[in-house]
Image (cartoon, rainbow, N blue to C red; front, side, top):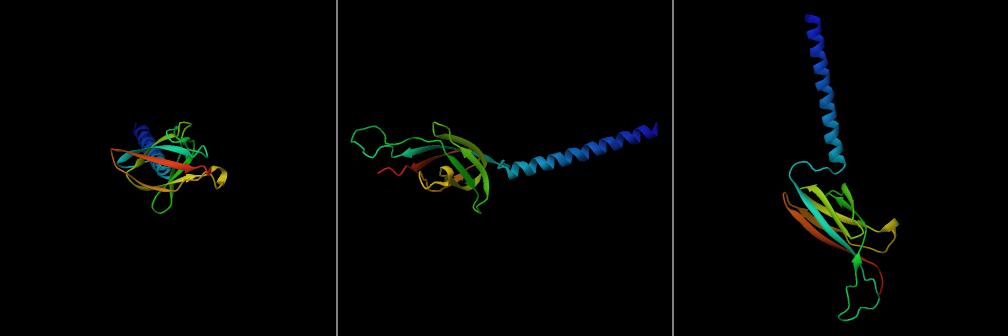
Length: 140
């Protein structure tokens, strides 16, 4: 009887050790992949491309359109904590740990145009932060 009780304890101890390792790996992966730990907030935004016509008429429609783009989210140290893609409607949403970030829009295939400037943003815990990212098409 003592032998099986001892074996059961060893199995339980081994299982707990494995679970601790898995939990540690999961936490490390979440942090490395931009997973938020601690208080979080939501970052949402709209990406546009403009001008889309070289001639803008008074009273005419908007000279920009929604744009699907890739945006890197960096810490103050320049570490990329997340990458988000806006949809065809130009919108994106991302949950991040509260803090200061720099949004770095990426031009397609490292081409000079269209281009958008980096944007500094602060995500506040429990709140939604909204940004607009305008890409310059280069049309003049």
